[in-house]
Amino acid sequence: MELIFKIAWRNIQRHKGKSIVIGAILFIGALLMTVGNGVISGMEKGLTQNIIESFTGHIVLISDKNESDSVLLSMMGKAVEPINNYPAIKKILLEQSDIEKFLPVGKNMAITLYESGMAPGFAFLLGVDIEEYKKMFPDNITVIEGRMLEKGEKGIVIPTSARKEYFDYTNIWLIPEGGVVVKENLPEDAKKNMNELITKDNAVFMGSTESNTTTDIRLGVKGVVKYKALNTIWGHFTIGDIESYRECMGYFSAQDKVSELPKEKKELLSMKNENLDSLFGSESMFVSSAGKVDVSEIDFKKKESVKKENINLETGVYNLVFVKLKNGGTLKSEVKKLNDIFKANKIGIRAVTWKKAAGAIGSMTTIIKGALFLFVMFLFLVAIIIIVNTLSMAALERTSEIGMMRVVGARKEFISRMFFGETAILSIIFGCAGILCGIIIVKLLPFFNITSQNDMIQLLFGGNKFQPFLSITDIGLTVGQLVLVTFIAVIYPIKVAKSVTPLDAISRE
Image (cartoon, rainbow, N blue to C red; front, side, top):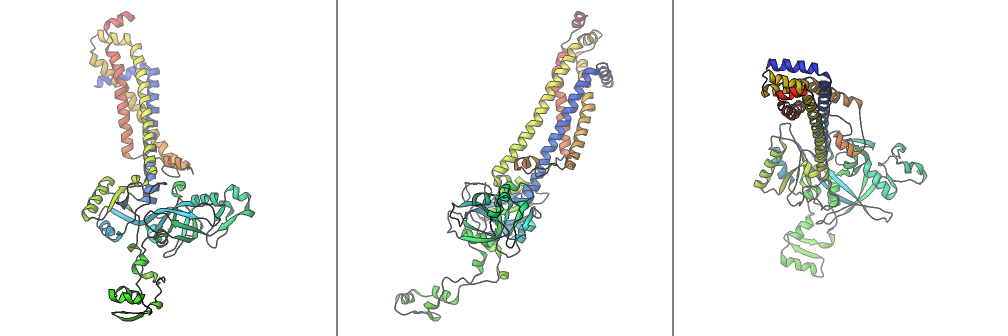
């Protein structure tokens, strides 16, 4: 073997021109494959941070009644079914060692009503307990104007994208309560017509569900926010307090749970059938087991106030539960385990991955990742074709040399090993140099602070900043690709070299 490599090295030195061409191809191919793998890994890592860590978690729990797993961005889809038994779900989640955090939310499409008589618009409402939301997704949004919602406060914070859509449709510019117009944040057409600009600090929403009686509700704008990444996509989601969301959707609220019926109402409901007849008599009094009650004194429309500290928000209705896994948690196995537990306990809930819940966005990330992988494979194939062509030409040009080696007793196996040795040496020197340069480039690229506000490019970047990333596994993958290129590329040239006979050397002479 040592002799083979010595002869291969001498042949590389003798045929420097061809060797440099092959080496350059291997260098460029290895460099591009390294950078390509870094871009793919950077996209995956970025999406983990900007979607999983900042919006959905790894797993989304939805009602079994939902026909589709895509529950986040289905613009024309059905309303997301309600979840009425969150306390039972919470108990199960707390028992799972692989789960780090979880957050119940209300999510559905709402109709936006305009006082100007225009046709209604649409918006996604995300109802949350704001304190729990901050714990689940810390630092995922930046306040541009105004402030965030406070604990127990009713209102909304509206993303910049949703505010721009609202303005384009109504010519009304939403500002926070007590705030003023910030000229820098205005669209260009609004800046030109400042005197005609109409501002409001609230918006009217009406729930859009198929099974509930919805209510129109006016919510004050507490702040204008911007998602740190994918703001155009996530910017459709206006965040409000969970109780206002429930009221808008006509859902059972936590306050409804703790509200007690007035004494008179309880006595009315406890009456025996014969005593109900007195309601239709001329007297305004009826008799119950508790005595006489004046019906005229009962205010059936009055809703008793409940102290905020007595309200447990978790007892009301939700639509989704976002779940984050610990580092050791495996997504597929955890989804299966949760579904088995929910089925055994007849909870009426199923777990889906964030990609399925995100619908088109989850599919888009898979498509982009696939496209990048195909690009790397394209480089892989191009490198093979060029190397095969170059080595084959080199073999034909060295017909006399190979023929003379055959004359003095060199076997075909020796010729094969010699050609393979030459290619292997070039791969080790130039290929490893290309991988090393690729690693350096991947490490340096984040320092150039390449950013984009385009959501499609952000999907490619994995966020608003281009940050390719290489793990040990990615480097190992590139080395494996280089080895495979070497093996495949040398097959045909070896076949050409082995076909040379001693007579070929004589005929060439």
